[in-house]
Image 1: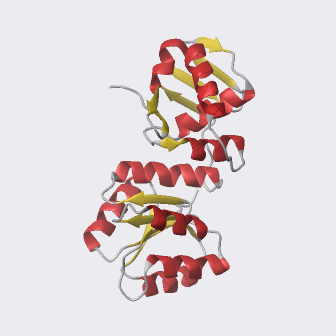
Image 2: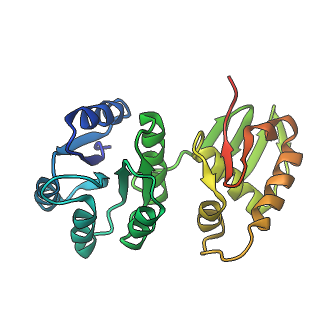
Length: 226
């Protein structure tokens, strides 16, 4: 399979190199742009870009303008990078159709994990049918979960929730994000639905349920100790 192309747009060459090195290690091809105008040119020149990592603060043309221009013609996934953890920025980003929003400084490993999760979601890379972590083996094709070799009976939604957690290992997931991805609708109201499912999942998985960490006031994270 050909390598998927990712465009990294940032006016700091050090940042571009850092992100590029991590992506190349995961077998992606990386295009670089040092400002918004170059990003637009590259985007129109190359029809095979699978995802764009886009800095907000840039000379000539900022990330918002680039995003607006690209969204006129394409639904290519976009991850926005910003130095400001401003909620207004985040809301603007989602209004413009940004897929993910990451504040600097960030862990390049987490960025790559998010890139892969988005590309799996958009089917640009096929999701692994079997995911293993922390003694849990989840087989998507067989719709089967085992922990320490013993089969665990899960409801459909419990299975989907566990798969989503395992595909996004190490990433903090808000309740809203979980609802949108597992329940597939914008959820307004409380998030007790998720908490109830997580409680059942932990109970059924026994010791394996320890991998599902609670992030107070936000949501959950699937993390294997060690």
